[in-house]
Every structure is written in C-alpha cells, then in structure tokens.
Image (cartoon, rainbow, N blue to C red):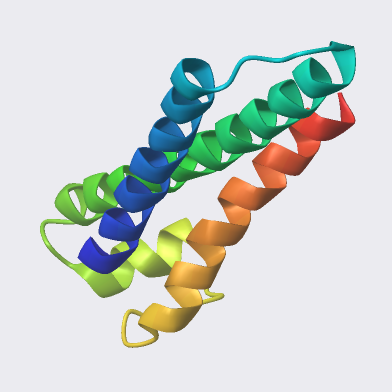
Length: 110
C-alpha cells in the first residue's frame, strides 16, 4: 500500500511540476500554441486527479483495515468483494489504479 501511495504522490508532484513549468516558461505566440499548452495542462491535471483518487482509495482501504481491528484479510475481502486476497498486492494495486482510471475516463465522457 505504501508503494502505491508513494507512486500516487510522485504522479501528483510530476503533474504539478509540469503545470507550473507551462505557466511560467511558455508564452503562446498564437491561438494554436495556446491550444497546445492548454491541452498539455489538461492532460497533466487528469494525471494529478488520478493520483488523488489513488491516494483516496488507499486511505479507504486503510480505514477498512482499522474498522476490522487490523484484520487486513477481512478488510480486503469486503472492500474488493473477494476479487483479491491480501497476499496478492499486485491485484490490489491494479484494482486501486483502475478505479482511479475509470473515474478519470467517466469525467472525460461528461
């Protein structure tokens, strides 16, 4: 879980850095340049949003573990409806990341 959380923090920091660099170091010369810069900022914001959603999923899982008095197996089983076991961290990581990606895709469609 810590590794997933750290990856999400790295995503957020990289996206923030990209957005800040675009704001401070670029000056659009015409509408096409402004459009490209805006698209890049939007893409960075989507990455940032995905990282935030991943961090929230990790926090929810941690909360469930506390709710189950530290019984992580029971917490994982309840949260992921039997799709993953506590010993299968890769599956849990993929589920958490996919939840963030699905939310981002839903926003894209709206």
